Amino acid sequence: MRAQDVPSSHGWLWVKQGLDLFRKAPRMWLAMSVLWLVLFFATLLLMWPIGAAIVLVLYPAFVALWVRACQQIDGLEKLAIGPAFAALAPSVGKLVALGGLIVLVQTILTIIASNW
Image (cartoon, rainbow, N blue to C red; front, side):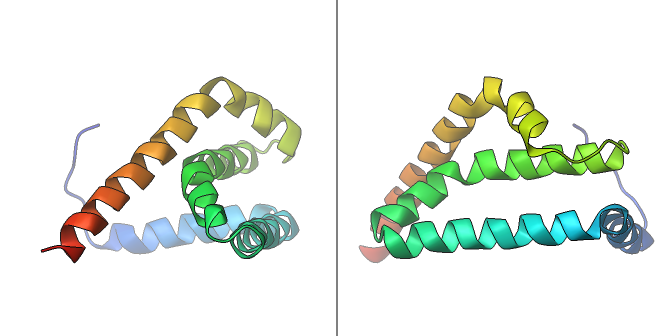
């Protein structure tokens, strides 16, 4: 991917495109958002402190699932979680490994910063 210069008005275009995507399936977006929040807060609260690590490790996989849902909505497909999970299945291991790497790097940086 190459960086490219664009006018500042593209920021507003990006917001407008996001709102257009929301308008295509507002109830599904709200349901996904509430489910996302409940899942993460339940994991954090019920499994503290291990829940925080679980959330961080699984975060890249959930973001990829969210992006797949956006692709379904944008492609005028009916949003369905099953096909989104199926599309994500081949790369779940890599996404969880990425989450583990993020947790490791954050831990190392926290240790370095607290001992500085």
